[in-house]
Length: 426
Image (cartoon, rainbow, N blue to C red; front, side):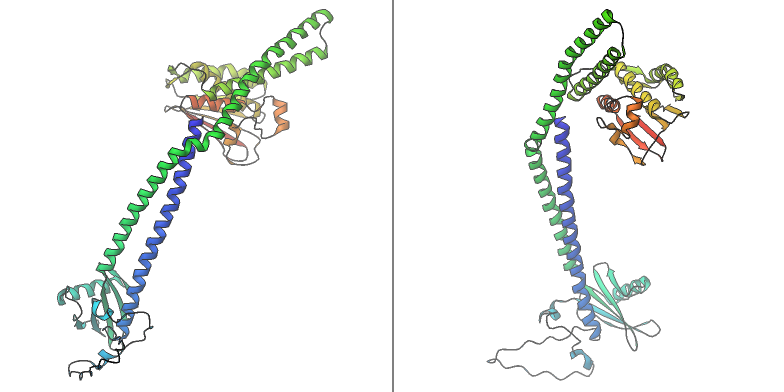
């Protein structure tokens, strides 16, 4: 049990670390991508507002250096080339016009290419620019990515202007940062997992020791109780032999029987969970075992005004312990008979894959997962449990048997009055 507890602690702690690291990496890389696209969009906006060229950003020269006079504008140069668009003072540096690679394409009112400005890029030809323009227009979006180029479409008085910004370096650095963050995050995750594995035994030791002491106490107490209960039962027999039976002696014998049954169940459950009992496993015909137990329980069910309806696939074999499997079926059927509605059938089915299902009408207060019924001493209705007998240990023992056979048991309330127990043994 301590190893199961340790494994569960390792899984939960590792999963928590993974979720935190994964969320952190996703957030920082999404932020990095959004920051890159925002900067690209600002640059595209500035170029678009400045008629397809990067705005001139002047920087004050030191007083001891003369400022060269601006050259006259050439005849074939647009007067708007030197005009600056609406910029925030901190958006760009004076070096940005020289380091930014971009080009623009102007379309007339009919959508035909009117002009192409490739002065600020060397990697694109006129034919490639035309092809990229057609691809962008087919997308129908005003901005986005086309390969490693970020583009923006702007409506002008004479038609449409499309500005392409080369983001190759930005994308390279972003992808490089993504890979590095994955490597660092993965290394950090495995390092933390290694530490969790190393220190997990120390972390769960107090709880494991407490649990083991509890199980040992139950086992020892069960053994110690058997002797006084046997003496009380024997003394009651002597009293009845001398004075005859009475309601008092019958009550004593009934309570001794209840305590003996409870003690045996607790001892059996503790031994199963401690793994003290070494059970022998062999190949068994599970179909025959279930059929025999159903036939034996039929009379008990009819005495309660209920019926057992079995649909068992033939020749389903399993590697297990026959005594424990019979006890498992007895517990499940006994629980179904005692707690099902009067006059209702108890449906028992076994599929060819080894899946055992019991379904009955019951008094339920909720729907959905009901695996809490597998807990020790749990009762959905204490008053009804006193009427039907039992201590809430039967399903706990059934769960322990299934675990010893490496199987799985689940309890589900299908609706407000239908309970289904499913056992998978292979």
